[in-house]
Image (cartoon, rainbow, N blue to C red; front, side, top):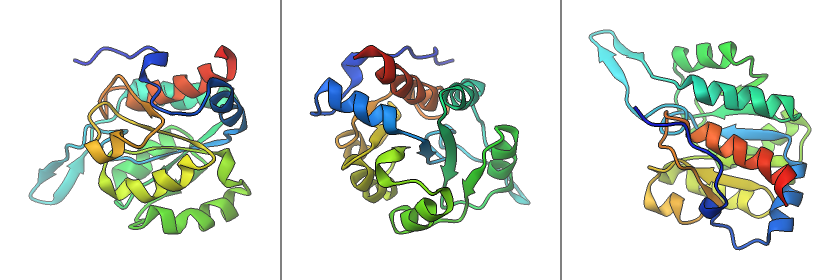
Length: 185
């Protein structure tokens, strides 16, 4: 069992000054999250019928609710097109769910068009090399994060590294960081 993380300024990896991080946090209106490796522990249960189950953390669900209380929506963007991800998104009452997206960065114009948001109103959390292009893009004007167990290339470029691994509160930790940035500095 992994303990719930607490916000810690020591995990901020950004070279941006605190007032710039706060400014960006105040502008965030949508947190985009990868699914496998962020909302789940990257494990998948298979049966003879194929993929059957993924494990999600209820603490991450509370992170979605806490963001919503601060006027910030959450959206899942994943290359997978799995019914259990759709069910989790329904449970969390997410307005935006982007399934079956192989190139997340190339899909950004669609996301911006559907949401009516600008790049500086986005935050993103991802864990693997396929997340690097969208992370690098959002890093320019928004906020980015990664779970504790993200691959090295991702962990090295995000602005915040969660204390928890994927599927064990990493999303909640990132959400709390954004919320606290709005109030801390």
